[in-house]
Image (cartoon, rainbow, N blue to C red; front, side, top):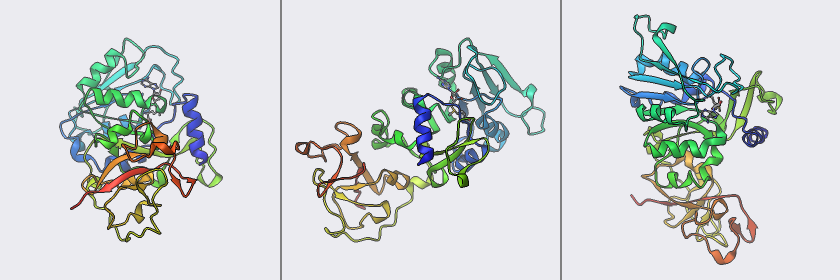
Length: 329
Ligand SMILES: C[S@@+](CC[C@H](N)C(=O)[O-])C[C@H]1O[C@@H](n2cnc3c(N)ncnc32)[C@H](O)[C@@H]1O
């Protein structure tokens, strides 16, 4: 929880300078290898001199069969990991693969070019580079996550990006999840990651790592097909009205944990948001979520006359829920 508070504080102060470890990129990317053959990859929130995203794609360029790697850097031109964003001009970089046969990206093989502006992913010149990309992979600034995703959707790009799990119920993001235009990747172990950062780490001693900040509630968001999304969740529990009471104000039963979803209930069920980690669109349909996340989000499951948007069980307020239904085989 401490990590989560840390992240919320970072979001508020627009402290976006925390950097992804190579091991976390490798852990996730190993599930997507087939998507990259002959593709142009863009990392557009990445100082190529320090970004592990650039490092991963440059060093795996041949193994992945990439066509082109483009990286853009925001503002800072100094090769300092902890970008102070105090230089208005940024750079972009292009790598077309190994030319001299040593299978390593050498400095003379990497084309470094100045950008006219500050490298903001929303600037026209960065959008031009976005148009040339097939897949965008990065950890974007969390404070601009909504805008960042909106732009990817507008330009119909494939993507694999890191974000805060809370983004699931943002009003700009949730509809994309319901419409199966975006889903969760494999994620971080225990839903938390360590990022390279100078920000003060408030993680407990056991979780503290030097030079890092522990961030809980981080995950990968993608629209690339992955096997996980087609794995069936094994359901073993039987429905009883006692174990699965109906909410007072939503026309759905309450399911405490994803593993407890009953195998024989055909109506609407309220499940924790973490269900999305197990979501298989061939097995379940997402109907909506609690109105506390946004007006109209429950898609008619809410009884508006209750005037309470949080789910109520015997008068007691419960935590936010997703509403799902099983798809009949
Ligand atoms: C969470 S950090 C991650 C950095 C890098 N992608 C990584 O994973 O190591 C987000 C980065 O986005 C940059 N950034 C902030 N605002 C930006 C913008 N408007 N356009 C492009 N990059 C931006 C920040 O400077 C920061 O380095």
